[in-house]
Amino acid sequence: MDIVRLSKIAFVAAIGFFASMTVWGNIDDYQSRFSLARHVLFMETMFPFSEMERRAIEIPRWNHVIYISIIAVKALVAAICWFGAFKMLCHVGTAKQNFNESKQWAVGGLALGFIVWLVELIAAAREFFGMRIHKSWSEMDLAILFCVTTIAVLIFISMVDEERDPW
Image (cartoon, helix red, strand yellow):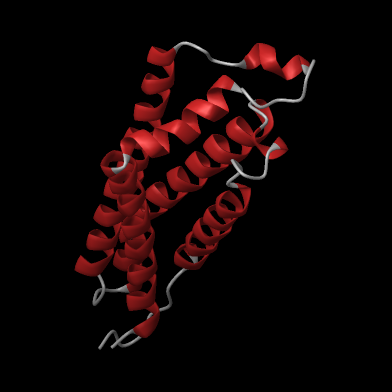
């Protein structure tokens, strides 16, 4: 049994599972999770006289459109990661070239996941909308954890597999 290949598959599936649970949580508990997104988009707790307030998106319909778009992209991350893990599993016992080529979907899902968490939580929410200012509404620790975990898995699965006896 090739533990390295199986580990790579399991890691990609774990990110797919995490993204799936994020999507499910955002849909299942829409109102409370949306309230965080709305709070960040409205920028309602900025420092007095902050020039950043002009960036606020105060149109409720747009808040919902943005939030639903975030959920949809995370669902795409989940689907691509799950499909990537499945493709890798189908090639787990094949020659190194076949297995290495089977990683493409997984790499795409992980890269998209990293971009989503970096852009959504760190660049947009933290920097553009000032989420970093208020600790009670900030999810920066989680955002950094998501990014680091996803990029670590991406690096691990991107490592070229050597030819070995697969079983």
